[in-house]
Length: 507
Image 1 (cartoon, rainbow, N blue to C red):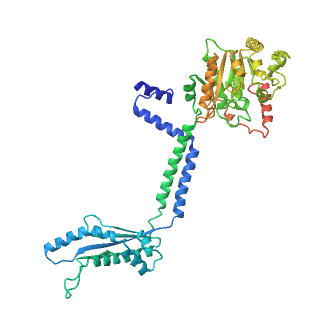
Image 2 (image 1 turned 90 degrees about the vertical axis):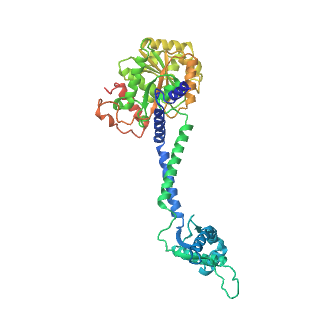
Image 3 (image 1 turned 60 degrees about the horizontal axis):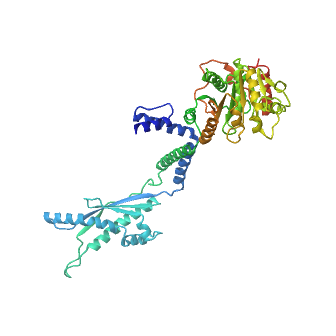
């Protein structure tokens, strides 16, 4: 039982195994706070909605005032002690019944007619409350009304009419014509109603507080529900736990990357460029005994950043003095030539169908050799799985220290499955907060099933860390001053390509 619980904790929080139960509660609290932080906009909107609802309830409600009157019930008896005790017991026994008479038609009907109220006796009874505290001979009457003066007038009228009705009901018939009938009880008004100065409802502070709490609870519930229904991966630890593969680097999201996809030149000192250097270093030291020369870069679905990862990894290897060739083997939607501003008309497919040799179509971007895709063929899967493709990769591996191959996504098409078996290893790119967990698991299983050596994963477009920068003051201070992108993204790409042709660092 303990082992199973420990395993569940380790799966929920990879790399952290609490020793005490209180640590589990702390971790769960931190997880809830992180969920709320990720959905802060939803929480804020719900709080604003709750406060607005409380304010609207206050503004739209009609003020209600309360007036109070009090009566004392006493027994009319002689002065002897025994008679006084009997009268007191009689009053205590009857006072609870008297409280029920306050809302009777005998009381409310007379009050409506005497004050000329625009309401019915039953409606007035609904605004009257009477109570007799246990152990006392007091009757407290409360009247609610939208007008403060009218509330006080009705409370007094109800009190006096109630006193008359009770005394009349308790009056016994005279035993002889010469004697006057007399009530055994007497009700005296001890407190007349005063005009209330403030309404009892609505209560603005209470309504706003209730709206705030309701909005907070609604926002927290919506955030937790969203987190429960969200099947994407939010952290690198979650990715590592799902795939059982090392996360070689987390590439932070950069809003300027669509206009400036290359982490070189002016962007060479950014956190994104440093993340690609970490990827290069981890890749070099991950397989020291058997370093792969031909590496396939792929993803489970389109739009996860595999081409950007392949291009920047290739430039990072070149920056370290490693002779590198970048091959665009995504024959469905090739992007390398467009990203680097190179010619796409001749390339990989030209070599595979025998129209050209490798040297004839090889292009350069700085010190990086690039083999673009060439014309898009009608049969990409057959070309990439052919013997000629295997031979081409062997030739490139013999001429370069590293060959980075950008491929099509794994799950939509079968191109990469055939090509990955010809490479020395594969990198799986996963986009943070975008790729479903089951798609990542399926892609990992596909690579494992066909016997591909998966070197690790790359967590792309991950949230930036809270602290500014990525180091301890090293690097170019002007790195943060990134020039603004031009209105034409194509022109920016071509400008970056020309910089790289002159040298990776702009030399």
